[in-house]
Amino acid sequence: MKKTIATVTAVVAAMFIFLTVVVTAILYHGVYEDNVRATLSEELDILSHLYETGNDIREIGGRNGRLTIINPDGSVEYDSEAQYSVMENHKERKEVKEAFLKGRGSDERQSDTLSIKQIYEAVLLSDGNVLRLSKNASTVIAFFSMISGPVVSLVVILLILVVFIASKASDYIVAPINALDLDNPEENNVYDEISPLLLKIARQKNEVREEIADKERTRKEFEFIISTLSEGLVVLGRGGRILSFNKSAATLLEEKIEDDKPFLAYLKSADSKELVLSALNGKDGETTFKVSSKILELSAYSSRSGGAVVLMRDITEKCERERMRKEFTANVSHELKTPITTIMGFSELLENPEIEREKVTDFASEINKEALRLRDIVGDIIELSSLDEGYKGENEEINVRNTVETEIKKLEHKADDNGVSVENYVSSSLIIIGIPKVFSEVISNLLDNAIRYNKKGGWVKVESKEMDGKVEISVSDNGIGIPKESIERVFERFYRVDKSRSRESGGTGLGLSIVKNGMERMGGEVRVESTQGEGSVFTLTFPLNH
Image (tube, rainbow, N blue to C red; front, top):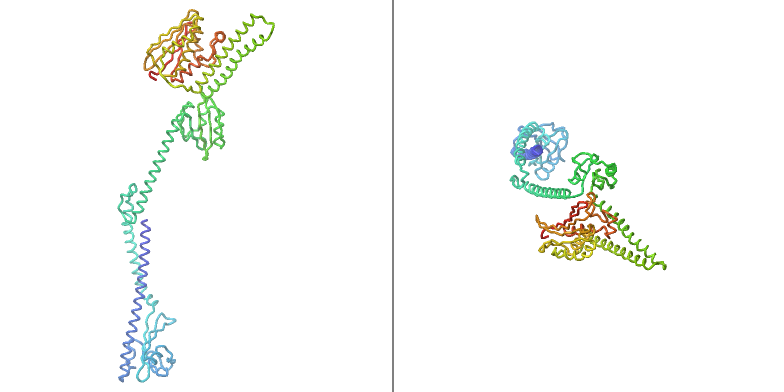
């Protein structure tokens, strides 16, 4: 900028110097010609006066010019610088012609070969002759040629001064601009001409600052979102280098992931590696693979930049639910098939007209027994499905002792038949918040199992206690107990510790699944402790004042 200002200033100054010299020379030359004419006119007046008074002006001649006397016929009578006898007729010369007509004439003629101009002044004398006086005057070009040397020297000196002054002036002009505080454009006080620019810079700076702040907020929001995702997210650049990832990705892969490393190094499955390579080559896809005990689903999507985005999800629970669903379906089919087959078999036997009366009664009893079992299975399946889908009952206050007492009375006949005593030791003041129907089902199934899998002369106790902000309700017995290897599976649907005894006792294999799902529906927990041959304790835990 400084160089530009100095150069422009010097060029402009040079142009002005040049124009000034030219205009001055032209104006001066005009004054010079006017002075020549005035001098000629004055001298011509003097000479004509002397001529009229009888003086011989030929002896005087033209002191400041060329003197010529022209006769009325145009012939030259006298010339102070040439041999007039051989000169051509001057009658048609402009200045002579005007003098004969008007009494005075003037003209100027430029030489074709010399850079001079001849100025003529003529006057008519009383004897009819014309007195003419002429003088040479330099043309503009000749004048410039004359003064070119001094003018060029002067111009060079002036240009040197101009360049120096322009350099200093540009320093002075640019200094405040170089000192501008662009971090705070509005606080600068320099030139009024720059103020609009500074205001625009300030406005744009604020806009850029706001845009950067918005992008920063968006980035933080994005990082927060992906950091809270349970799914693992990995962004890959060209060649499969890791550009970004969230914590869940490292957790799912059980690896310490580092930036700018090939993602394939963290994959142990050949299928997952091949899928990621395909995504890097523009082909999306998904696959599943195992990491320890987890089953992960990996989806890979190609990006326009030549990289890929990898999304990983833990589908272990989903796969487990799918497995349980298939097992449940198979178990339901099996459990329903047995009583239905039995009922159909006995029904076919009853169609025989020769069957004995006593056997008809026995067959009818077996059909009724299997029908009741079928009813219990269907009822438990419906109850379990209702809990799976989210039971619609409302939470209410439940008097635990009264509910337990009601369920004991319902099972009193079964307890007497099995020779089992049932005692209710629950505090009469114990109140919990839950779904009454679901809680009744939970207690009923626990009591039914405790009676069903007990010994003759055995006992069942229901007790309660409050501790650490929780309420615990336990159903204990001194029955056959549960083998250690089966304790973790007793809440699975249709799982039986002893299948033959369960069927003989009329169990459906769904009671404890109903207990577990019912407690989850009410926000509680259930746990079991058991020793084979000694008995079991099922403990229900509710938050106090839930």
